[in-house]
Every structure is written in C-alpha cells, then in structure tokens.
Length: 258
Image: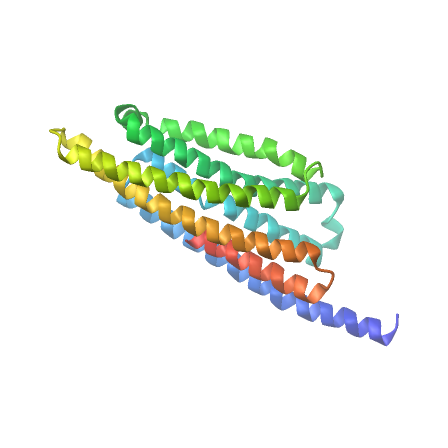
C-alpha cells in the first residue's frame, strides 16, 4: 500500500468518525424528544384515544427509518463483517417500511378525521379500538408495500418521488378537513346540542388545526429529505455524500421532534 493510500484511508477514518458522532447525537435527541412529547400527549389527555394513538405513531415512522439508517452506518463502518447481504436486506426493509408507513399514517389520519366529523357517536365509542385496528393495518401494509423496494422491483428514487408527491395531496385534504371542522363547529354553536357534542365539536376543530400544521411541517421536511437523497444518489464524491447524508438525517430528526 502506498503512502498516499494510507493517508487517504486515515483521512476517511477521521472524517467518518465525527459524522458518526453527529448522527448518534441526532438519533438520541430525536428519541428523547419523541418520548417527552408522547408522554405529555397521553398525560394531558387532550384528544380522543383514537387520535392520541395515531399521533403517537406519526413520529414513530421516521424514528424507525432513522434507527435503520443509524444501524446501517454502525454496521458498515464499525463492524464490517456483519454487513452481509442478508443484513442489508433486513435494514433496507425496515427503512422502506418506515418511509411508507409515514404516508400510510397520513391516510389513516384522514380517515380518522372523517369518522370524527361525520360519525361522532361511533368515533367516541370506538376509542381506542379503531386506532389499534388501523395502526395494525398501517404497519402490515407498509411491510408488504416495502418489499418491492427492498428487492429492487421499484427503485428508491421512484419511491421517494411518489411519496413526496402524495404529501402535497394530503396538504390539500387536511386543509379541507379543517375548513369542514370550522363550518361544523359554527353550525353546532347555533344548535341546542348536548355538552358532549359541543365538546367533541371543539376537539375536532383543535385537532383539524393541529393536523394541518403537522401535515405542512411533514411536507416541508419530506421534500427536503427527498431533495437531499436525490443529490446523494447522484453524487460520486464521498465527501459531499457523507455531509449530505448527515444533513438529510438531521431533517429526519427534526421531523420526529416537530
């Protein structure tokens, strides 16, 4: 091995180590923020049990992706012998499941809001069984839909573009649901409804406002991640590749913390 090759290997080692530390810090901060936020959500009991469970799962999906990415870096850089084809397939499946689950969770939140707005009694009495059922379907569907991506039938770029485009559609849908919640709340204020129905009307209005904000934030972060990973996949230089990957994971952590 030449001196130039040794120097290059040393530079790559010392360059990779700080980035791995940064990624580890991102991961720890995201997990702590997630646990803290979810603890507050369940302790205060602000929303219906169905919505609370769906909101709990909402940041869990990017956390799964972040965990898989972190595990991949550790295995590849620190324990090369573990980085077999089987391990790669497992990590890729977990990563793709987390990515697809994020979008499916948005779809389930839309269904949740439709039932809450137009089938109030059914929604109130179904907590938390409705959410448990749809969350189970969400992760099962994500695992199945991730298989074509894991085994190369659908490339990562196509998956990213489709899912990113879907978030813009969800923005419009959540905005319309918020408008519907406002109109129904205004109507309910003029009717002689029970205290329970008035409370649910206010809860639907607050939930609509919260979910609209979350969806816009999700779209911004997801678009940024898609942009970063697009540049990453087209990059041939290790240096910008490592930096961009770290920045992309920072956005993923911010998505968990939002």
